[in-house]
Length: 189
Image 1 (tube, helix red, strand yellow):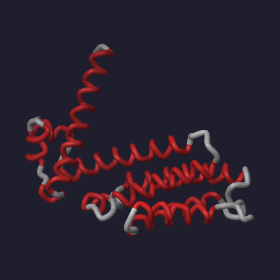
Image 2 (cartoon, one colour; image 1 turned 45 degrees about the horizontal axis):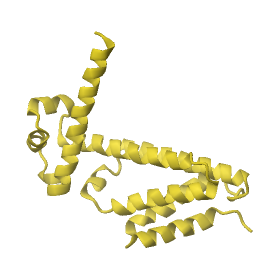
Image 3 (tube, helix red, strand yellow; image 1 turned 180 degrees about the vertical axis):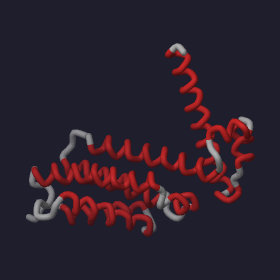
Image 4 (spheres, rainbow, N blue to C red; image 1 turned 180 degrees about the horizontal axis):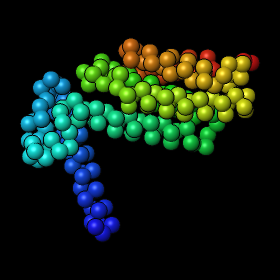
């Protein structure tokens, strides 16, 4: 099969899968997770149920794929922040604020609760910890961050500390939480 043909088929498959994921997310947002069925997804996406079942076996599988895609988007954004040319404290603050605001905005959602322990979430947390660890290690080397505690431990501290954003009442409170968390990793003096 010619490469152009193969590329076109793959692009079509990705487009259909993305439409299914987006449609399911919209239906969940409108009607709640328990009201979404394979039939409603197929109807709203404008595809046949048989086609839908070629891509996903049930709504839970669609939601998991959608959530995995969202986690990937968030991680890519956090990696962009890590790669900026600013000093380590500014990069870490931007990363932690972005992460904490995401936690705050998506707290107490039905979908989040259902997918919280999924393997892609566990992998995402490991990847995020690695991104934070890199900035902390770099900042320790330049004297910005503590060097008496390893970057691995400090990354764990940061992630758990900003995890409290899910319980805060406002974005302003989330930003204050990030400032307190940063104070905990700064080099003494």
